[in-house]
Image (cartoon, rainbow, N blue to C red):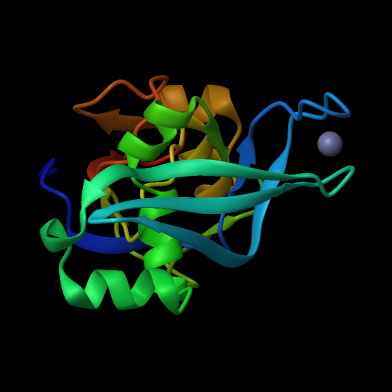
Length: 186
Ligand SMILES: [Zn+2]
């Protein structure tokens, strides 16, 4: 019997909405905030611009400002980007929120719970074993491969550890694409 996988199946990890932010509210001490509709605030001071992304506490609605640009030269901005800030462009809100630099600078982490889904082809268990699966990430959702695979295949964690061959650690969180092979069950 050949150990070469017969079939390669695509799985996709996709964002379904923007993640919440794990960010402590200074008023009510809640640790969850949202970008809501997505709003920027731009403040001009001579030739310098400050740009903030506004987020609201999910408990008390208090607004906080996350620094996107601080005292940046107006001429250093791409005009399209500047228009995007003024227009609260949803794509720009998403790209700034998901930019690790913004999270680092403003000391929050993203809470992806309920904000993504795994898309798998249906009725693939009729395929000949072993099966290879390629997992692609359309958004940088951090997942633990072990859990993702268990969910996608409807297997227990023990079965995952027994039947899955993979070059990366199944326990370590990743948001980069990876491939694994499913070996036949007993
Ligand atoms: Zn609050």
